[in-house]
Image (tube, rainbow, N blue to C red; front, side):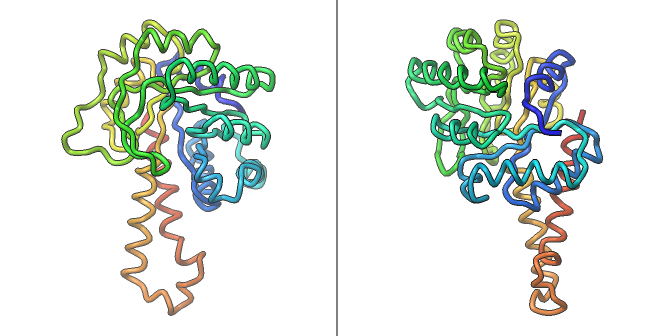
Length: 280
């Protein structure tokens, strides 16, 4: 069933547990992530970045695709469709397309502008019972072809965002989008601990791919209730496609048929998602 993120994240935060946010990239991706959630009986958040929404064909396509798959696949576990890293206009488009949850990312804006726009988005979301994620500090790495340096979240600024009434806050604690470099300094657990004690609300860890299970567990004990995964699944998908193409003549035996060509990749998405969801 399609829900907003409020209840599932508040429950996860209270129980020091986590809800995984899995980015989706096409119909097959969405189908097999949902089937993995069904088999594990775990709530899941399906993340759609603005560039992914464009690739799908638009926000309405994303909403109708997800809601139809939930119905036809008979998915009973809670599913949240969530805009990932949207600007103000992206949020409005997603809201108009009936997304039950959005993330406004104003982290690259001056703090006061980020705060003011977040308040405007919150007023809209609150009236429509849509869950809202905002970001203060900055996650490093590459997201939608935009390169960012890590900016650690300031506690006093995070408190201003809590006052707005948002449901979850993405924090910069050394986490990075994409693959982690060999010289990565790791998660700043001291900062995370301080943020958790002051904010007492669900916190979000972007860049979950490549972080060890031990560190993820420690994060959940310190307030992280939502962890975003994308790169990990993209790599598994690419490896499966590469293996199939290398080991099969794709022009024979109808291997060029997408249902054959993508079979191993779809299985890899399903199996990796199950592995992720079953961590806790």
